[in-house]
Length: 111
View 1: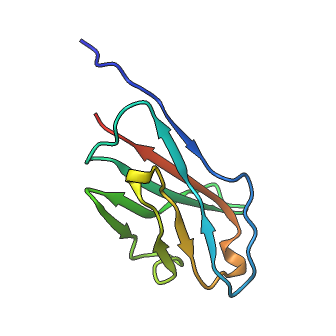
View 2: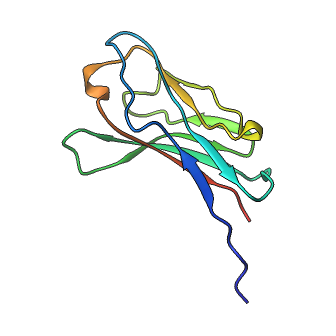
């Protein structure tokens, strides 16, 4: 049989503006009719302006934040979320012009 699937609604601001050298919070809130499982995972992806490729820059799983140790964000990212409060936000410090692009927050709440 197929197990029923309930959607998770993820909310992020359409546009976020920051100043070079400053910090910016990328907000990601979510809502699910199901309880928040211990296995919840949150992944942030970045697609630079003009690029076709999206890269994973941050992952939260099994109660721990994991900042990818490659790429331009590795030393400048901070976990600011709290899954129990339905928050998957991150902070990027020391903004650079090359940070311009599309950031995507992906939330999974198994089963």
